[in-house]
Image (cartoon, rainbow, N blue to C red; front, top):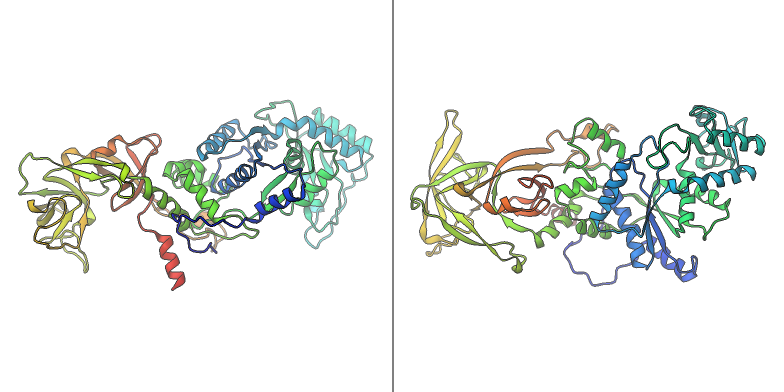
Length: 566
């Protein structure tokens, strides 16, 4: 399902209704629940790169803090050293800066390892936790399942002093990895599986990216997360729906402690699902590791880095996530809606340029030899302040292969022998002859022009049915252009087989050697321009002579809404 039809460019001055998360903040403030304080956090694990799903959470958490005069921390939940790396810490901070959000503070769960350990000892003394020497596989089996009883560990009633001594030996490195664990003593018959004596600490002899070899035991996410929220003074712990079952454990852990602030409250919202995309780190990593894409910043990837390379502006991503808002149930948003926001943004701002992606020679045989006509061309008809530029026109041009047919199909209105068309901002031309190679492929088109049609209008009022873009051959710059189709062919990848990679599109990218007007040799890395008639293209961040197609010109979202309403 998708939101109602929308014009992303519309200036809606009506006061929007609050989503349920913001309404909770309003209600809490009215009730004085946290003394009027609002503090949120964005807590990524530094084991990968941020993607579009994270973007929704980022703008939600930072947006709430901004709107209610509160604060928002960036906290790295770095409790699993086997998969985490300092390079991801730097990358996440860079991505947040590009998205335009500034954390009030940067924290790490590892900042709290000493306090978390102390609190774990307190749990043991209170008879709320015990050291278990049962192996991980058996622990999993003894938990049972939904509708199936759990089996209590033989270590569950181990005396607190004995567990405390073993826990300290775990900390001191006496035991091997996986030999012992610390478990909460809650309820092995609870309907909520997360309450069936969850593991709070495990032994891992893996150097940590910050604490190095100081610890050989590490807290689990469920023990560290809520306590980190409490230490930081978080009021509203906002998570995606998959953590709703964890909330009971989140609250149980906090209930056992003497907290420095009011106990934070967890609220869950639906994660972002978009057609033809996947947000699973596992699958995204597989795409990279198996070479299906060029890396985490490949322009086909839904990572922040990939979207940035492709030319998705941060402000349009925020407008998109603001529009779809937050909900209590999962749904899937059409990718065409996201693209509509991107297109609307660039339509108002992007400079227009001409580029020929599949070049074919066009030679005007009656053009004055050596003459160059400089055309004064508007940079963006949507933005008068963008001004104009001079574009050279000569008798030697590049046009698109698709803009000429020797044997045209029905309703083909572009160039063909004997037909007159308009060259954008220039003259009417009529094809007179096609030159072919030995295989019959057209390699050059000869034409004549009407010098009375400068600017694209005939003084006698005659009309043509097609306008084509072009680039002067003597002035053209070379460029590499990547055009993209959907990375996954299925709207919901994996629907038919259960494996999203089965729906991977092997033709998701095509690359051509293009000829472009001189101004395109001067674009800045990351700048997005409109290739007239073709779409919006972003200059590569590392090589501005390479362009990535951001989105096409056709508003597919509008077409979807028309079909739905018909």
